[in-house]
Image (cartoon, rainbow, N blue to C red; front, side, top):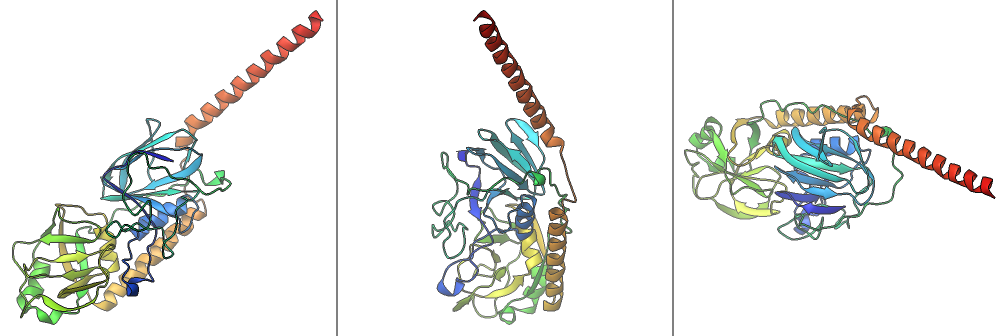
Length: 351
């Protein structure tokens, strides 16, 4: 598969390298575990590496047949200039060109493959961490003329047309948080201010962390600095300027700023679909509430994956043109065979 155009920010990702933070390696991995797992379920490739695509995607030419699915809240995608459905397993022939033009709703989408990407694993993961330059395709985002290869695998044509309706995110701009390790190092007014004002996501945001801008600054009782300690996913650091930073997948493993809160797992899944200039507001929840939300979220994800694997939902509209093409080729082949036999018979008669 050749990259003709890379898109805004396209990287190879999987679930991440989750066992090596103690050694100083960032987790990386997909920002949305739900969309990642749905994408792989559609193409029957559990835990496979995917392309994580931000805002607008790449143009890719396939040098081998495969079955793919691009999963997002909503997106505009084309195969050989013909629009194809999002969140659906689609057969791609050798030579065809896939264009992921734009993500119309949300910020990220995931391109999954039935035949797996042939990517070298580093510390048990194919995920890209661009800041350290490891994983994925040479530790970086895609560039023009990059070439990928697929592992050999017999295509399971039964999965073609598998589809799933991605539900809208409930309260997408309300982000649940629990008390952070340094919660008590902020005054009571700051505890209330964090959840009572609306923040905008800064343009200086990326997979490492979302910088937030609020009208009023949070106030430390003393100062922002602490002895460096491990950083949990979703930690809300507050440096000296009083403006929060939510640390995400590509975060450093330790840090020395006070952490007033931690975004819950469900909250981080929401953040994955937010972009610069989007507005968010925080909501305090208890550890028990966050745990229940997590269990409910995972349960629903597993139920959705199960329904996909049972081939419960199908959309075959996108393969009709292919069926017509195949029929035309078959018809053409029969005609050529007939003409060949006719010429052979004429030669024999002359003899």
